[in-house]
Structure formats: structure tokens, C-alpha cells
Image (tube, rainbow, N blue to C red; front, side, top):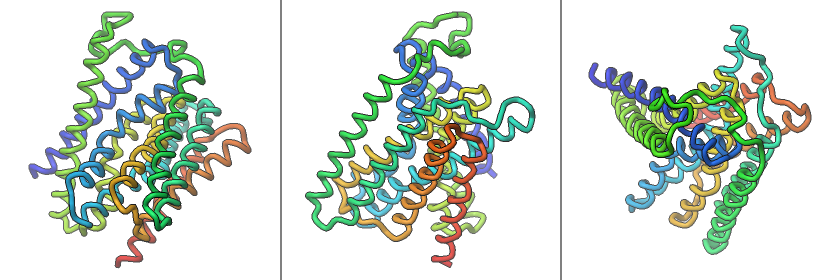
Length: 332
């Protein structure tokens, strides 16, 4: 009962922190004169990616066994998979639910060039990370790791340069300074810091207690590691995107996801390649292929139709279900 209570409390902390985070990061982007794309795809994406980023790094750096390295590699590949499938599905579902209530249209009001750039970068860098796992000489793998880091630097530069400034869109008053029309930078940074701390702490408590509840309910450890824990660690991105979708800020909502996909498929795999043998299990390889397929279909639709519909994002749910079905079939 205590674990269930802590589970609900931590979920509330994550939700509140996500609200604080989206509000603060919008103000920080406005103060830095960044575009919506830069705020969503870089600031928000990297900030909310902290929980699932720390897990593989800690496992690889502080774990010296083969099992620890396998856990680290699995966590590295799990993040892009969850973002490219389930997070897309959740965002599309939220948009559709709001559309059915008459609060918005089913067409996603996104910066097409931003989405195309993010998804294209993701397909290229993640494919490179997967190709690295097929190489036999680790020297070549490290070269690819360096290329992945350079590619992300190019991505950041291009994202910052492109798009309209966030200041041209409406932003709600800063939560910690609602009486100020233009808050001070230190208050914005304070709220951002509190939000990130809440996201990290809430996610840690949520995952820990979800594991205990799952064990109590008799859920197999493998199912827990493949399905339950990844869903929990990706909660910040999902909540942020739902908040932004509800406010009609689709570029921020999807940029938060696609930007995290680029970060999680370049910088983090580069660390994994440098510090581990970078040999993928069949399940890990399959998750990567499915993530690439899901992102590829969304990109093809965007390029051919010149727009993005909420229905299109639901394809992520189909690919996620396919992966779960294949994994469970292979293990049971």
C-alpha cells in the first residue's frame, strides 16, 4: 500500500515538475531569443532526457560486469525506441482527444522544416550507431562515435539558426513570478532547476516503487525491464508534450520528442560505443530497427503530404505493440 501511495505521489511530482519545466523553458528560450524549434528540440529535449540518460551512463561507468554493460546498452537503445513509438502515439492520442472535444484540429501545427530536420538527423545518426554494432574492429566503432558527436553539434547549430523566435508566441506568466510581466533571469533559472530536480527525483521514486509493485503483482523481471521501466523514465517527455499540445504549441510538443530522439541516438550511443564493446542483442537490434521504421514512416508522410496529422503519429503505437508482441513471443 505504501508503494502504491508513493507511486501516485511521485507521479504527481512529475506532473507538477513538467508544468514548471515547460513554463520555465519557454521563458528561458524567449530571453535567449531562441526559436521554438531550439527550445523544444534542444533545451526541453536535453532537460527531460536526464532520467533515462543517467541510467545507462551509471550502468556503464560504475558497473564492471558484462551484465551491467548489457543493461547500459539496452537502456541507451530503449530511449529512442520509446520516443519514436510510444511517445509519438501518446502525443497523437492527446491531440485527437482534444480534437474530438472541439478544442483543436487534427492537423498538427508544427514547423515542417523542424520536423523534417529532426527526423532526418535521427534516421542518419541512429543508423550509424546501429552500423557500428556490426563492425568487428573497435577503432572503426570509435570513429563512428566521433562522427555522431560532430553530427549532433551540427544539428544544434542548424536548429538554433533556423525558425522564428519564441518571443513571437504567447507565453503564460512565470509560475514563480506571476505578478511580473517579464521575470528576472535568476527566477527563471530557479524554477527550471526546481523543475529538473522534481523530474529527476519523481522519476527515480516512480521507477523504484513501480518495480516493487510489479514484483508484488508477480510481473516477470524481463517484462518489467522491457515494458514498465522505460515507460516510466519517458514520462517527462510525454507529459511535457501533452501540456504543449493542449496549448496548441505543437512545434514545442513534437520538438521535445524528436529533439530528444536526436540527442539519445547520437551523444548517448557515442558514449556507449566508446566505453563498451557495443555488441547488440537480437532484441536490442530489433528495437532499433522498429524505431527507425516508425520515424521513417512519419517522415515520409510529412514529406509527401506537406503536413502532419495526429492520426499519423498513432503508427508509433502499432510499432510499439509489434515489438512487445515479438519480445514476449521470443521469451515465453
